[in-house]
Amino acid sequence: MALILNNEVVLRDERHFHPDFLCYRNIPSYRTTFVSPTAFDLLKAWTHPLTVEEARVLFTDSARTHGESVIGGEFDAFVDQLVSEETLEQASVGDYHSEPLWGLDYSVPNTPVRPMRFPSKINLTLTEGCNLRCLHCLRNASPEVDTSQDLTTPELANLFDQFNRGGLIALAISGGETTVRQDIIDIIDLLHMVRAHTEFFTNGHRLTPAIRTGLVSLLARKRRGMHVHVSLDGGTEESHDWLRDRHGSFRRVLQSVEALVSDGHLIILESVLTPRNLDTIPELFEMAKHLGVRGLSLHPASFTGRAKVNPVSLKQGDLLVAEQLIQHLAEQYQENFKTEFKWQFFPHPANDKTERAFLASNVSEAGMFHLGLQSDGSVYPCTETIGSDGLTIGNIREQSLQDIWHSGRWDFYRGGWRLEQLSGCRGCRLDGNCATQACRCYAFSTIGNHYAPMPECYQSAAELGIGGGPTDVVRV
Image 1 (tube, helix red, strand yellow):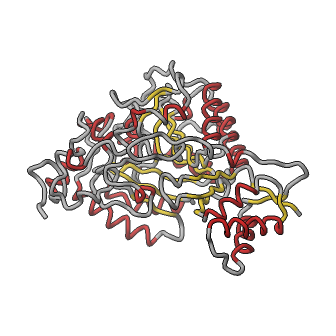
Image 2 (image 1 turned 90 degrees about the vertical axis):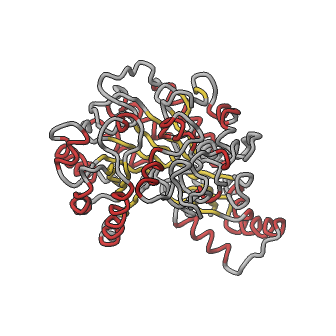
Image 3 (image 1 turned 90 degrees about the horizontal axis):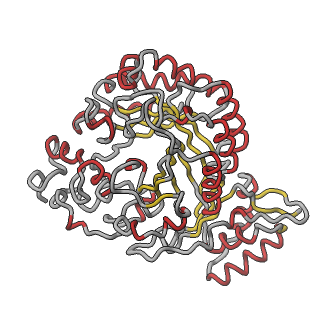
């Protein structure tokens, strides 16, 4: 029996980015696996039908070429894994699956530090229109926003094809509110063609029967390769409705989550932490358990959009207390769902378990493997800076995404500045090992200066003395 690589698999060869970055992503099983050069060569060969014995010969020859030793049983175990996770499937006569090979021949921009051949993660804002006026909205979304320049359905279809050809691994679809677009059913249908794992964000207010039907159809195509993120800010009606500025929002969201769970979706609750909901965190965890969601993601509001002028920001001391409580609750509810806590742009030690571990302290994720796309086609360094004046890299209505990825406008984020240029980091005990230090685009969008400390760093200086301006640091 001949086997062949599933077309839903994405192969990424990013050894110029990091010597060990060879991987395949099985989108339906929601799994990324890093492999050796020998195993990667075999996966590329398996885009043609091969029997197990034919593949064994190729594997042995490739191991010899790469100078890798083959441990007894290693090949058989690898093939068993590929078959069990449906990375390999039974081949028919004449089959050839080219899609996993897309993007492997893309060139790499000549920059201070070389990025991936193509972004692995993209956040696409479908629209800045919204049915709500949330107090913390980083886009200033509302029903009155002009949406006439939003990408059309055909333009999105072309963009999704570029995603596939580049080998995109993760796509986040957000707003504004995704479901206010008149063509959202058509867009959901287009998402069937996107191989990347898809995160669909919604506030849960407009899940019509037609939208639910479309999402169920998309889920059947993607299986586990799709999550739906729904906003639920706090464990009480008062805390949520205050932030969302809409009476009855809490009850409506609960109804939507129950419906989505009954449809079989893997639901992630997104909860923005504010001074008004910190004491409702235990109720939120119990609510998540009752709803049967897959995950709970908690994070403070960013200093962008309406959050700049509304009382939604936290002091770091409060966030430290909240983190301890969340860690305790995460252990208590770990059998029910996965909990993710994000410090956002408050200074904290870098996490070596993410792609951040591959980057120097003056190199940002933005432009290395991540970018943000505005609803009008404009490309920005990251999700948080979409719409920020002075940070546009290009527009997909004028250039292909691959050409924009080659733009010299990324050079600043790709190692084009020095840590010594930062005005507020010298002497901080996190200097050189801060998860937010490299993010200069957020500093520019909030402060207007690429080299300034984050707004959150000033709070840190006042509260704990672990960041902030040049006179408010802890000398070590």
